[in-house]
Amino acid sequence: MTRAIVIDTDPGQDDALAILLALAAPEALDVRGIVAVAGNVPLPLTQKNACRLVDLSGRDDVPVYAGCARPMVRDLITAENVHGNSGVDGYDWPQTKTPLQDQHGVDFIIETLMHAGVGEITLCTLGPLTNIAMALVKEPRCVRGIREIVMMGGGFFEGGNTTPAAEFNILVDPHAAHVVFTSGATLTLIPLDVTHKALVTADRLAAMAALGNETGKACAGMLSYFNRHDVEKYGSQGAPLHDPCVIAYLLKPELFSGKKIPVQIEISDGLTLGMTVMDWWGTTTEAPNCTVMRHIDADGYFDLLTTHLARLP
Image (cartoon, rainbow, N blue to C red; front, side):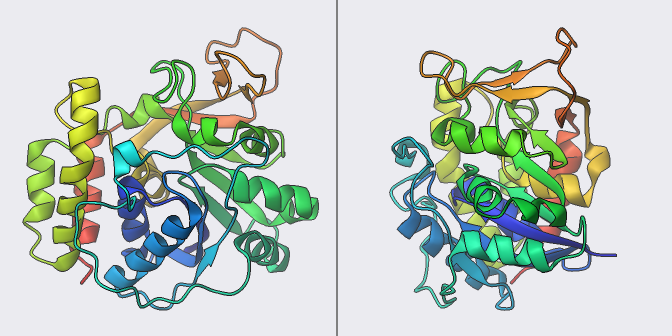
């Protein structure tokens, strides 16, 4: 039985591979739509990149929507230093064919959830949580349609990757994250503690390049570009491949392990703004509100990814 999902994203090379992985698994995932949000690059680019990825996949049945152009409270911060000026540097993209839908992405999310059965739709978030929070604020009843929100974001044992305390997706819009984490929805978080164990090594990159299809060529090019920043930053064998973990978790949850714990978002200005405060050891009386993953079978993850990418044009 397929799982109905909506992908909320700010592509981003790692977002790109997550989207392609989802679009390559129609037998498991019914992608109702892709909604762009400002994050890695501004909204005009993230929405264009989402359309580019639908083009590349050949899945012209999947609509793309533009969501929020800025965070709920703070000014937008972006990450061109990581992703390049386009957000998906590393591949020579052809002219975009997939049209952007007229409806605002937040309204699409609300409409999808309100018309769904109870607990029918899984929201897959690969970027800042602005669109999801705005939907929950504009129409609180839409939470009834959410089966699960699976998020890439945050960090605890690994700390942050944008400040010492905060991971990028949460830091861009901590107030939106606070709304989501206090919504009562079923939440699953895949933090840096997992993604920093999923590295794009030379062998894994070569496997994508060897697929022989245009998708493999595009993914290898994007990840070659993406690697250059994080290899220098972390001194590792490759960049952490963050966002496809969200889709991999849906396709093969046994690749991951973690536990349900209390998680809160720091929204006060200061050194810890945007921190995901995880009570991993049960030191408070707060009720657990989020299943947080901590470990991943990295080889199995990359095998899943490469096998699925081989299905695409």
